Structures are given as structure tokens and as C-alpha cells.
Length: 476
Image (cartoon, rainbow, N blue to C red; front, top):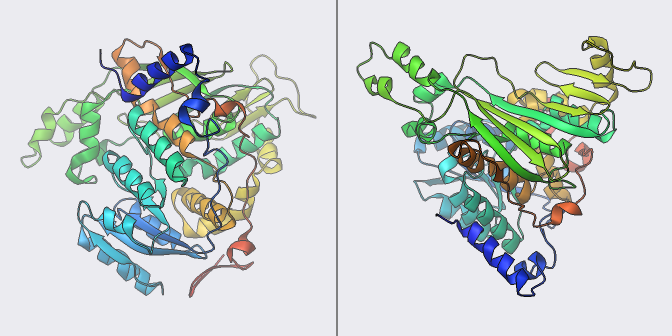
């Protein structure tokens, strides 16, 4: 039987407890079970960011970050020099100072070691997220990592332990927490409009066949991952917002999961049709994938709530993250947005009740999240997945500038990313239950749930009617 490093430590901890030791707090020697919960760094009035990877997502990050007051992109790193040249040209055209350049497979180390960087913004492929994230932390830099930030449970634990040791932020860049639907859902939950929460459903349903088979991903890295892995390998877009609604790691925690894959074949059918006459890419016609067309992973929490997580990147379906949160008094449902609630002045649910568009619109306006109200017009001007990317960057930058805790910590990163390996394990064991580690080591029982957060734009340096970033101005 193969035993992971974490499983071995868990067995050792159990033996220590039987021998008379006092449990996890004594074992970890931190004085508290989850020292990074509620952690805040000293205020960073000016944040210097080094962006690692300026390809698909990274170039957009360079430009978004450069539009935040008192945030500067001071360094960039990539495998390809032409990508860096393109972003240097954009910085020059928009009156931003040039960033230090680093080129090559290990050039990120020089960026992380630089005295001119406070935050490392990691936009690389999944396979190198952890090694870069860990190096950044050990170099004394806050580490922000694109999704999924880690693909194995052991890597999740290593990020947790390193963040705790270095006392630095390690946050997953989950932009979907800052979309209008997701922010509205958490607002409804915090105002108790849905009653006692019992269930959530979330997903990443996104037809990625064309992207998987073309040259969108260098060296076909995403295709290779889907060839080699089953289960849910991209869980966080829908899952992290659902966890925030259900107070996962902040009053509740994931206990165990079961996972089941459907029949596959969509990738193979697509390749046989698209590359039927191809010569250069003829090899793609014969590729076989472990990735199913649909994965269903069902999580049960310590308090008995359930979370259904779906993953489908192979079939001809419209995009959806589902965004369903259900309680004893109502339900929020996304894609498209629908709300039903037994609130004051609204009728009790009856058999065959349908969603009422007027109720949805009324509740949407009444419970608009304060952060969305503050920032949505600015975000619409800058763009990025409907503005959610910019609001995400706006919020973490505001927190760091003010010396406040971030909305997502390293335990949230680890818990949601652990689904990648754990779902694949369950699939391989005929959907047998698999325990989800408690990365907070008991800290979830006392942590404060995420509130209705906001930003003060004037404190950040925005004027009332303009985005101001250095010498550049953009009307809103």
C-alpha cells in the first residue's frame, strides 16, 4: 500500500495522541490550529508585483494590475521573450514604467529573489504552480496563484505549511468569487434570505475541445493532463464561491466525498472529425483520454450539508458554473439567475411553484452585494470575465494596502484544490468514499465566516469619477 507523506504524519499524530500527547496544536507547535486564518500583513501602501507567465492569462493580469492605484508591475517573467516585449510596449504606451524582465524556465527564481517585488502573481500552467508558489514564499514574497493552485494533496499541505512558516499570504486567484451572481448569492446567505443552508451545486461546464486540440496551450500541456487524469481536475470556479456561502473552513468543513465519471469519448469523436484529413496533426486522431465527459463529485460537510461539483469540458453544452445555493426558506440558482424565497411579503412555496422573474429582480436589487455596487462600473471599463477579474485584484490589493486579511487564505486554496486528487481516487475505487483532509487542523470550528466585504475607492487613490493609475486616466 502506498502511503503519502500526509497520511504518514496523520498516523504518527494518532500514535502520539495515544501516547499522551495533547493533539494537533502541540504537534504543530503553532499555538493555534490554523495560524493563517485571519492573518494580515503590515500595510503595503505601494504594492510591487512580479507577474510570472504573461501568456493566456498573464498579459491580461499585467494590464489590469497596472490600472490599480498604488500597484505597479515591476517585474515580468516568461519562457518567450516576445511575450515580454509585447507587454513592455503596452506599459510604455500607457505611461507606465518598464518592468524588469526575466526569460527562461527557471527565470522565475530571479524574479522572486528580486528586492523590487512584494507579490508574485503566478499565471503559469498548473504543473508548475506549486514549485513557483513555494519558491516565492521562501523568498519572502506573498504568493498569488492561478487556479487550480495545486493538483495533489501533498502539494496542498506543502503550501499550507510553507505559508504558516513564512507568515506570508498564499491565495488562489479565484476570480469567480467576484462575479455578480456569486456576490449576490453570498449576500442572500448573509441576510438569511434562504434560511438554513443545506445544499449547494457548482460546476465548470465549458466546451474546451477546440482549445485542447489546437496550439492554445504550449506543448499541449492541458491536453496531456486530460489524457492522464480522471475525476474533477478543475473544480474551483464554482466550488470556492459555494464554500464561501456555506462557511467551509469558517464554521463547517468538508468531511468526505464520493466521485463518479461518466462515459467518455467526446474528445475522441471531435478529433476524428476535425483532423480526418490532417497530415501534420494526424496523431491527434488516435489520442485516448482518461478524462470523462462528465464527472460528478458529491461532498458531505461535517455539519451535514452537501455540495455537488460537476466537471465537463468535452461536450457541446453552453457554459455554466450552476451557482446553486439552497436553504430551508429559498434557493439561488445561476446561469441564468433565478431566486425564490419565502421572505416577508412573498408567498410560501406551493406544489409546482415556478421561478418568478419579478421576485428574482426584486431580490437582486434589494440584496446587491456592496462590493459589486461599489466596483462594477469600474470593472466593466477594465474588463476581464465581465469585470470579476478586476474586482478580485481590486479587493486583494485593497486588503494588502490596508493591512487587512484576504478573503481567501491558504486553507481555502488547499481544501478546494484537494478535490483534484481526491475525486480521481474515488473514481478509481468505484466511487468509494474518500476523506477530505482538515487543512485547518480544527481551526474551522472557531474561524469567522466571510462577511459582506467592500473597498473604499478613495482610500486606494481613486477619484470619484475616474480611474487613476499613475499618469493614465480612464473615464467611467
